[in-house]
Image 1 (tube, rainbow, N blue to C red):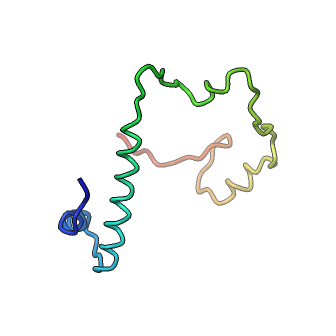
Image 2: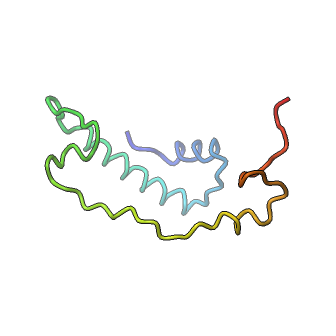
Amino acid sequence: MPLTALDLDRLATLSRLALTPGERDTMCVQLNDFFGMVEQIQAIDTCGVVPLSHPVDVQGDIALRLRCDLVTETDQRQANQRNAPALENGLFLVPKVIE
């Protein structure tokens, strides 16, 4: 069931959006196109398809091209803590919040 201009006006009011008539018409077309795509996806028969626990499961024995986990920055702890009002053993001290 496609959205009408009245439906979109109600949604805009609930969302606190001020839409011009041109914006409303454009958005109505875009939302109806999106809902049409969703209907196409829902029409696909997925009976017997086992859900993936992780997208990598579909790869099987294929090695994924992941970048190397390398350190690219030096330790900047002292420079980052230079403006801290209070430090102790390299940690920030903050006022007690819970009594």
